Structure formats: structure tokens, C-alpha cells
Amino acid sequence: ADLDQGINPPSEPEEVVQGPFEWKSSTFGRCDVLCGDGLRRRVNTCFDNGLNKTVSNSNCSDQPEPSKTMACSIPNPSCTDWVSTKAELKNIGNLGDYVCLQKHIDFEREDVQYLSQRFSNRTLNGCGHRISGLSFKNEGLFKNIAHSEISNLILYHPSIQAKDEDSQTAFRFGTLADVASGNSNVHNVELVLNEPASIEGAGPATYCGGLI
Image (tube, rainbow, N blue to C red; front, side):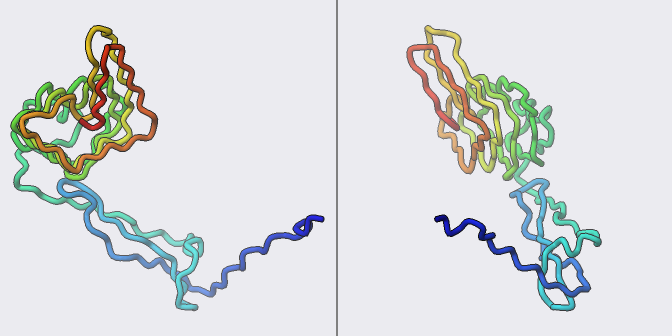
């Protein structure tokens, strides 16, 4: 016989509360980016003043909850150009020698045929921001990185559907760049996928560089 038949699992004990209730907030944390515009965050909890303890947040539902975020901005005097839109980012080849992202930039699944053919003798500091929604069908955000530095950047939820139609040539693919040369330095660059990448090469050899 099944001894568990007819036996109900124990119910959760009902929360003992008294009131009055109020929201209490932690202090705001640090800005969530290294430079440019970001957010500071905090945690709100419901407090039972009658019992002098934290209780379920539902007990404070009749009161407006304090904001959980606060805008922040961190300067970087090294930056010669600040980029805050995808139009500005697509014009990066005409900007100065130290480019910084001001905020997160969403490409909304737009196909990218290189922000710049060659990113040479320059610095791109992502400041910890995301470039999201890119659609890759080529050799990367930059075709060639030479004598340059790219850092503190998150390539967030890109759609990677790369395919080589030319059966006579080798196929090379990278999400950040096809080629990094000339003592280029890439660090703190993160690729965050939310769907499988599809990379198909028809040539005699296929080179998938991942980030590079």
C-alpha cells in the first residue's frame, strides 16, 4: 500500500504580522558602469514596526514603493568622443582616437556590415555597457583591428547566422573582428548569447574565431 495516499503535504505556516508597516531601503550601491551613464541600485523591504521585523513585501502593497534605482554618471577625461546611439556608433570610423560608450546601445536585430573596415590606432572603451541586438552575417563588428585596444564591452544577445556562399575560399568568422593584428589588445569583452549561433562555411576551410 502507498503510505502517502490521503496524506496532504504540510501547509506553509501563516505569516504573523501586526503592523503598522513601512518600506525600508538599503543604501544605493555603486554605479554599475565604469564610465558614462549608468544606474545605482538598492533593495526595498517591508518592515513591521509592531513586531520590529522584516515581513513579506505584500504587506506594504498599499504604500508606494521607493525607487530601486538612481541614475549615475562617471566621467572619463581620456575619452575624446562619447557615443550614445547606434547612428553614432556606425560612424565610429570618423571619430577620434579614444571612443567611449555613453550608454547601452540596442541595434534591434539590424544587420551590421562592419562599423569600420579597419579599426586602427584607436581605443574603444565600452565602459561596461552593452551593444545588444546585433545581427552578424559577416566577419564581425570590425573586419580588422590593428594597433588598437577594445575593452569593457558586452556584446549582448546577438543573432549570429553566418554563412559563406563562396565554395572556392576559406571562410573566417568572428563576432568582434575577423582579424586582430599589430599588437592589438582586447580585454574584458564578453559575448552573451540567448540563442544558438549558426555558422556555415562552404569553402575548403572554415575558421571560427569566436570573439576574435
